[in-house]
Amino acid sequence: MISFIARNAVRKSITLFFVSVISFLIIYLAPGEPSQIDPLNPMFTKEVLERFRKEFHLDKPLHIQYLYFYRDLFTGKSVSWKDNRPVLGKIWERFLNSLPLFILGTLITWTLSFPVGIRAAISRGSFYDRSTTFLAYFLISIPGFFFAYILIILVVTQLHVPVIGMQTFGLSSANSWTLLMDRLWHLFLPSVLGAAGGVAILSRYVRNQMLEVESQDYVRTAKAKGLPSDQVHYKHALRNALLPFVTMFGLVLPGLIGGSVIIESIFSWPGMGRMAYEAILARDYPVILTVNFVSAILVLAGTFLSDLLYMVVDPRIRL
Image (cartoon, rainbow, N blue to C red; front, side, top):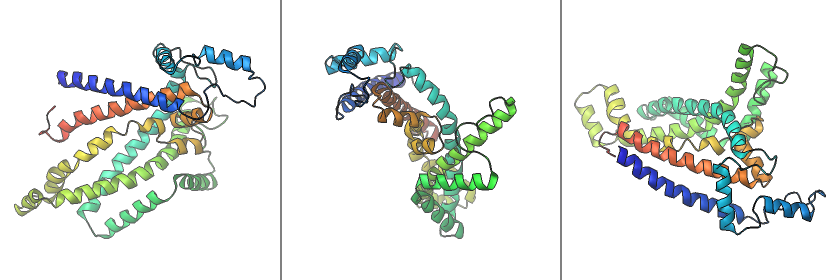
């Protein structure tokens, strides 16, 4: 186990280094220069721009800029060009806002997808299977922003309660219980909206994977031996059908960064995805590069978690 973790850490560190280099080069290959910030603003004179370039080492060669950027990032000195706030502090604040949205949406997606998909596979061709298939393709086809606006209109007109933002305006002086329930209410709708498409897609994967495993010889042999149907479906078939979803579960972590840009924008939720989108529009290179770096770390952490979960799902797999 220790040797596996050590080898894995070395490989992923090398991968992370190349990802950081490539993302840095891609950002700086974009049209224009980083110092071209709001050229129509009369306050940005040539002297100000030159001072800006020197302060952020933009007058140095590209490889020197790379070293300066990651030195400042790891020492906590990197600041946003947009508001001069520390980048790590800014990202941590938005990360805490996105975390509950991500956790609740992920729980809803993975909790509902497996029962729906498994039952659809077991009762293939039934009314339940056809109904869930129609609903899944409907949720996949409908645009997320359109579905969000429909939900907002229905909730506001029928329940007469606000749904925009993280809390109701003017409620900051209320007691703790009221603030908690208000936060949960504002969290519920965007989480359900974000999970709707995930449930539709993942339940289809579960159904198809179960159908593929159910057609294998060992499952037919277990049925021929007279084993209970629940034991055949959930012990023999489901466990072997879980392997692809271990990989998918490990890749859920990057959803913390950009999995909900549209939802955060529509509901005015100050999360990571919305911050990254605003940073791109403002050409805020330190924030963009740091978000890319954090995304790469989350992807590598997710794949490492998948490697460990493989052993739990299939004892034949050894590290």
